[in-house]
Length: 260
Ligand SMILES: O=C(CO)[C@H](O)[C@H](O)COP(=O)(O)O
View 1 (tube, rainbow, N blue to C red):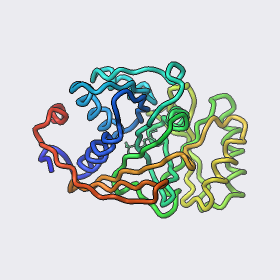
View 2 (view 1 turned 90 degrees about the vertical axis):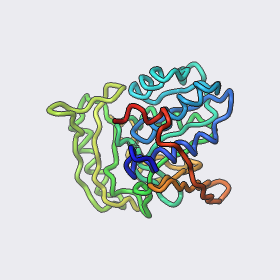
View 3 (view 1 turned 135 degrees about the vertical axis):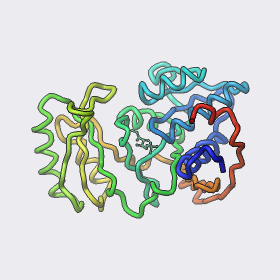
View 4 (view 1 turned 90 degrees about the horizontal axis):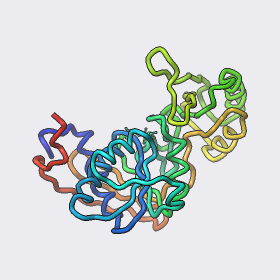
């Protein structure tokens, strides 16, 4: 383990590094958003420097900026239309590999890109693994127009769902509402546990003003879970296998150079 890396960063890094084994020359790859996805983009930057030819489709302006900085060729979903693979982080994943995403405020683009991919791989540290989704507040992107009415409708709707909590908070960025890449707001739903994620995902998206919720149902194919000691588990829901590897790395690798 690197002396420069905390256990949690090591876990995120080894998950990202292992996920890169799924990337082949010529692939169109969706690039997720967040601190774990950032490790993926860094790993990919090194591979591209070593000659790997891929086209990345970023899921946020943040990821696009980092990819450009690292010399990764990027395009848009409208240009490439379909992707071979998307690799992204998650806030929670359950045993069926259903997810909560959007902690970083990018779940709208992330869901569009992942859905337009042959496969989605989630990279995560062990803390993201749950028996039941819902402890992490569920992000719902809503348009700013009439957002308080949308919030009231959401409150009414979740009261009828198989969930534990009912608090809804407008996500803030300092004193102002958080604004997504699409110019929308995010309402975080504190549900505690979500008994029926599929039903919840469908019902929430019926409410006028809701653009997209952060539940990813039947979208993720593989989860790569990293640990602080360098071990990774690769769980493939389609094949029904879980494989364990150990990722070796050198703490002097360039990839860590700007962490200090
Ligand atoms: O969904 C996301 C961004 O919208 C992120 O993937 C999710 O929040 C996990 O982030 P991190 O890897 O920083 O824990």
